[in-house]
Image (cartoon, rainbow, N blue to C red; front, side, top):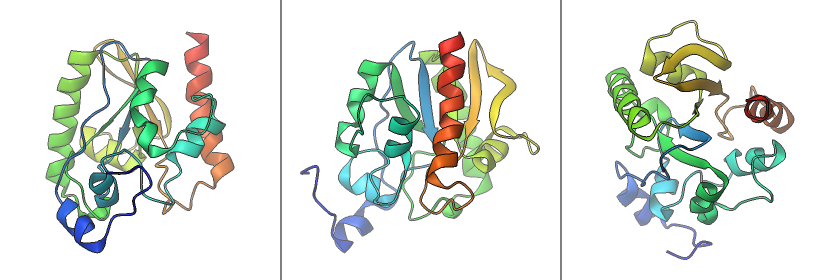
Length: 185
């Protein structure tokens, strides 16, 4: 699909419950972990592609990327030492369509994936998803005491445009804390 193609209603409907391949490699600096792909992302085949999602601008403003990446450039993150996965692989129109059991099962699959690929940091994009998937109901943003082997776990705000609690500047500042942590390692 062309990188600037806007999916039709039929393409969006067909993308429901589909998956998007991980962008992953062994030994990454950071594996960014969304809650689950949107149907828009599944329809176009690129991560965080839905208009209004602030993931790409936030990565740029926080200093992770040298320029503002567009969703169709998502695989280029690997050259910078970053990757993308999700807690739950199944695409939905909104994350609130995920059952609690799906998040718990996704957390177990994520542990297996992280154990295999061993990124330095697993950055989960959404504190509520982290709490539910890993059973830490009082978890807050930032570095967690919980690790997966040698992988540190860091919880960041969800970059969805629906997350009004974090305006763009606050979102970039939260992500920048992770980048600065990596620089100190």
